[in-house]
Image (tube, rainbow, N blue to C red; front, side, top):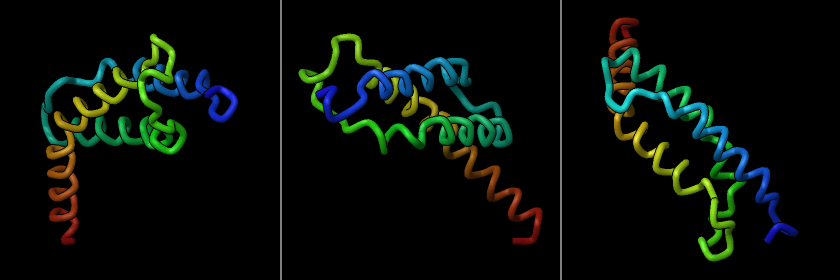
Length: 97
């Protein structure tokens, strides 16, 4: 598979996401904080789905960081997406929009 995809590079993307997002709070402490956490998460995540071909586990190295990365992304999204959206709604309402 390495001849078609840079698996080492994709693994580094997953690992960088994990290292950069591991400290994200596991629950919302308010809309403003959730907005900041969520935007940082989305910004770090956005390139991964375009570069990772989503190969079956049997074609990947045993220590492939993809599942851990995806689980972390989902945890952050679950914990912060709604509160982040509330922050945006509040900001728009305050701006008269």
